Image 1: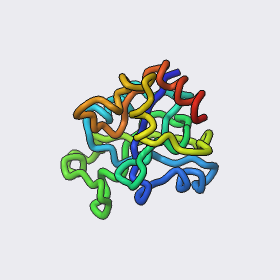
Image 2 (image 1 turned 120 degrees about the vertical axis):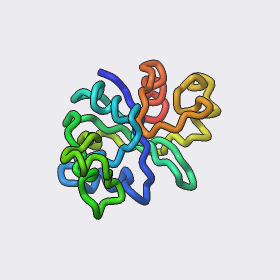
Image 3 (image 1 turned 90 degrees about the vertical axis):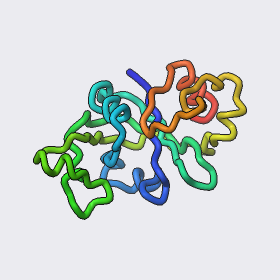
Length: 154
């Protein structure tokens, strides 16, 4: 089992949206970065755990933990001209070059692990999220960092 961090803007898709989805399962689409796509396509496995991170908001941070319940499949939003995630190259090829995965809400944190708290936690200083220039919306989380987060906030 691997651990991942996936960023979502809460006004687009929040933890509460995930919990409110049918069977608390949501599809994670709209990823348009090749490295993030490759993680999802090549490395995500059912049973992997995902730290659901709210980004681009007043208090960014990890809202809870989800589980990958369906591995990578074609992201249909890339082929939908009405979608904000439409990809002209995919449409011309007749197949999505992007993928989606399904995640299921597992545990909401009683209090979110805010970016500020994560930054000020010595045990998490090497976390990929905190590295200069790190902007990936999908990124691996080292097992020691994952266990620390789960112990402190989970």
